[in-house]
View 1 (cartoon, rainbow, N blue to C red):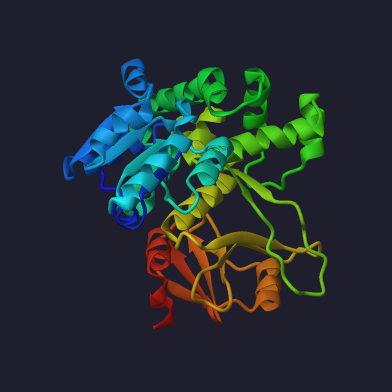
View 2 (view 1 turned 90 degrees about the horizontal axis):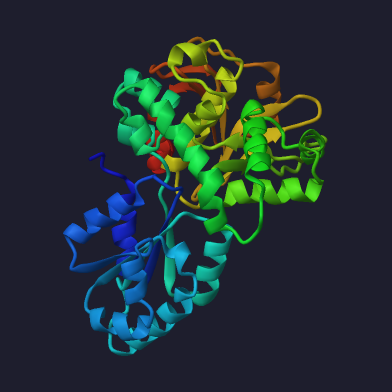
Length: 396
């Protein structure tokens, strides 16, 4: 079992709040992590995908009152959304008897509806923790493992598959299951699976590009509002990231559209039918794929309240990733390069002068760390992730 860094965060959250929601995409390892917690905690595990467990909760207050003395783990919570108001009553009853924390661990594949229901029903009683796919600090101790993680992505069954062929088959089945079955469970709208599949694939081909709703709508022959709703769905399920532009007080015309990324590099490659590193290295998406892979790994390591964006002006000044980290007055500027001998372009230098960041880095595919210009360092992905996991080291 690969130890997940977020395990510590979940345990801490359980000591602070009555309910903790562990949210992440399907197959990312939420159940495995919950079972790890259950092994060291007196608990009751209920799988709400099971008809028997849903039947036990036909009268949730009557049933769960008998387990006030232990942690109750509710898996697949999106299947029983009407449970949230009942949990609120149970939590308030328990508080009056001194049971204030560690009551419920709720697992769900994040969606807008789930967050809204939990936020409204359990406001002040719940803490949210996100479980992302595996990242370089968890699964990639060397260059070979990093390459495998990049090609296969961070879903555990994909990363740990016996071969690239088996890994690709898992990811393609994952995509098919989402389109044909899971979406109907997670959202309250009818979406043609074929249309969503085409949109998902279009976004993959334009990895890291500016989100142009009108262009997508024309290519799909649907309305712009429909495209916006469908992108919202993929974003809410943590499958797509919209990276917003950085808002700066500069006398330049700034790009206002977000950039869009398929969040897991393995899913990106599956959508494009890329099986191996050899195939990826010769594909036109290789640079954008590496960029998205780096962004996801750095944000997985960064403080949860870190704000991420990109900077781009109409004149060509550009920084791939701008991070506003708690505790720092000015942002960190990060440029992303795939090559082993990265050079700074005019666009980065101009953007650096505009923003005057706290620190600036160029994250590349190598492992050495060295200065490339005044106040700009070249650094490997794993070391940059470790710095973001402990940003106080930047102040030393």
